[in-house]
Amino acid sequence: MKVLHDTLDFLYENEKGETFITPMRFSGVLVKKEGKWLIQHAQYSDYTDGKPGVRIAT
Image (cartoon, rainbow, N blue to C red; front, side):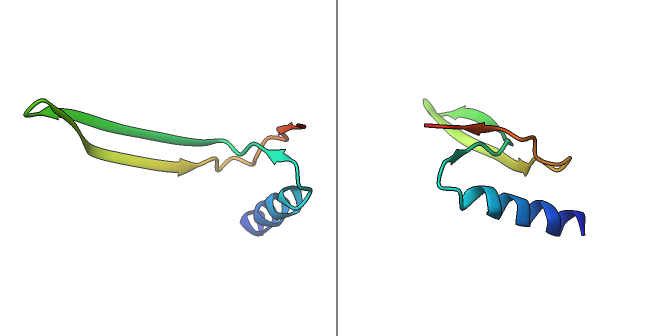
């Protein structure tokens, strides 16, 4: 129910038509091979402890 509530809350805020900031995290490992930087590992994660009420009005 918590996940459903957070999803519905996000959709409600998104429909307001303003800029909405949703925290998320990207991390990765780069390696240099033959003079080129390559992505060796990449990871993405959503904010899972409830979304803070962050909104930027433009």
